[in-house]
Image (cartoon, rainbow, N blue to C red; front, side, top):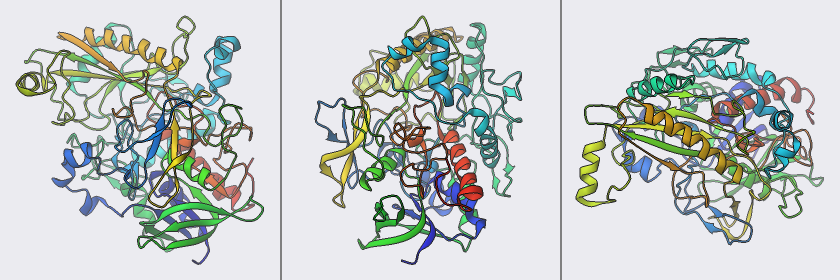
Length: 586
């Protein structure tokens, strides 16, 4: 193929945002997407898009793991086996990737997250941190450096919320624990569910600080700085695992692709399965990528700059397949690619009410909650508890879908008349609280290539070696107990039960979070990181590996806002520094 200036590997939210930022430079860019093209109209229109069986149960928008799976084991002394049905997490595919089916939860990471190791040692001491057995490190940048990019992305999306800290001044009604932001959210918060109102009262009575969950399921119609229009959310209850038919959720189809696809400088190619990044004889410069098209032809696309922006674990696999960077060795503790793989540590708490208390869970949205941050990050003293990190506590119903969103009291039969009677009795009368927390890296959790199993193109599958660290198990049990206390204090609650997902062994069959992190992490030292703070590969400077694979640990929150913020930082550096003088930015 004719050489281009930039080739993007994977064309989801992250890559489309960076391409949008660079599209008016005059550079010739090609976006390679392994899946099919899709757009709000006609592909996302109801009633077809509200098919719970197709999209939520059978994972209609997710990576085809018949052709390309991963393998999993809980420790290095086990044999990894293929994951043939997505459960715990859901890698997206097709144009727009996971940015199509995401919930739209729009959090910033906390100030300490970016200097996590320094902050933990300063507060608790080196001996306390060392005893936890975690391999935490600073990210190589600070909250103050990325705050302008947080602000920019939130205004591109029209984020709905209430600021808690504007330029250091705490704002009533917002999150008092958040880092200082430049200004208020562009649009007001979504409407509060009854579940959230009961939670708010209980949290206030217990002395906590409830605030409305920030969202990009918009509360009002909005026109963003690029002139693109978004509508107000109609609370249909079909956000997570579904696309939005109403142009009310920020996604590639609503805020990036409309600009890109009208530019003569950008070309989108779908059904292109990238096999490797090619490098020259020195091993220090990428020359392009090799991919298989829909007909199975092997094609080489030369490019001056390669931007890797797939689902995080797929980024790591591509680096390993391309032999970019030294693979991590857990026994020796050396190497970088695959190091510091982390996940998300979660639990649910349910409170059951009399039948005259109607939660109406079907009137939901992907991010329509009421929550507290009193136990997230480092917002409380961890010294007495023997762990670091934390979780937010969120009261939210995303939809009340009839197949999957039917929590029932302990002791309910699993099937038959007893189960049916319980569903009739409790549907619409259950309060739901979610705990969503940090994940700390350890030496034993990592990613590499499987020696046995291969994909449909004959390439090794990614092997995941993961189990929840003891630190995270302690953390989620502690926060779940706090959530249960709030749940019991919700007016009218008759019974409370919970399910903790963050416990051993990690259950890959039960959904927990699609927030896989690490494996190609950022930092200041090439011996402990794959990329610098601009997500530029240390070893091959004309390759950028973007996304949550860059995170040295996972913070409390849903990570899309931080992923996109760091991508804006990278795009700014590419545009204003790299293109003028190609080479290492650090």
